[in-house]
Image (tube, rainbow, N blue to C red):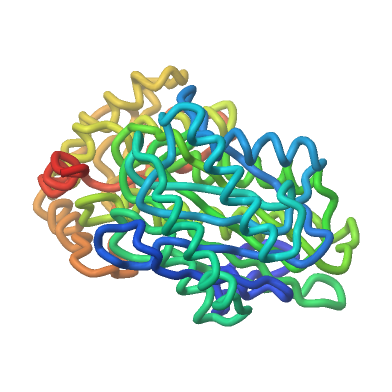
Length: 416
């Protein structure tokens, strides 16, 4: 993880979701996943925590999403804990889903000595399957017993929220803001059904600085727009997508809020890129940067369209420098471009200038693409595509991955 540019530097540290002072977490196995792996997690914030949330844009929403959003609205942006289960989405099961979500949070609130309204809930897994409530409620005892502020507890929680993910995703950063050190921690899950606004992903952020809930909500929304809403794996969104961010601690002076916003944006971006890198069947991360648009939002829209193109994704998987697919995707994005101004690079290789092709060593471009085949999680597994589309002042990026036969195998048998 890199360093944020600006008046202060955000540096990577260990600890994940529990790196900020005062936060605790745990993750246990209670039998929700057929594999027997960890499948139930909790994150607990200190008293007085502000909580911000961004939720799926899908019209078919799980009851837990509605419950989270309603509780945040009623509380004015305050919450102390979130419980997360993997294995079953608890979506599209009728009135039962809402009742189960309320029952789970009430039971956990009693164990944590909190009002139920202060407990959030997220679920992820197969849609249309109710939760095995007996296992889940019984498992809360172990969840509470394992609660800790350690790096091991953070890792257990990050593992417990996974579904088809191959690896857990957690980061933490710190920076000196004035006379104090502020820390941000985060964890996320997501591998398939990933597309902007949002995807079948969950993400959780902690911060040990006190902030106004309304400012925290605006700042989280902006960070999500440039991160989790800028990734795509397969063009599908889900019913349960949620990002929750908790902030608690001594109030941060107003002059340091812009630096905190930078740190939050970078943390969310790195978590989002980890989701794209772990796309089902993926062998490389795809990063598309568009410049020359009127606004950053337009640039991100065009970059997302390119990242989500099945033809672009399959070309990248085949290590085929088929740049025509890239500009064609850009042209259908709904964002204005100047065909005569187009310039395109794949990695260090420029293939298009002033809207026309350049003589290029295609074997060298293929070699660049072949080197990016992930195999393992390498730091140089990112295929970088840069596209200039005009003379506008703005730019923006999006992240995705290639599309492989393994993606089809995974999703053809997801419930069987």
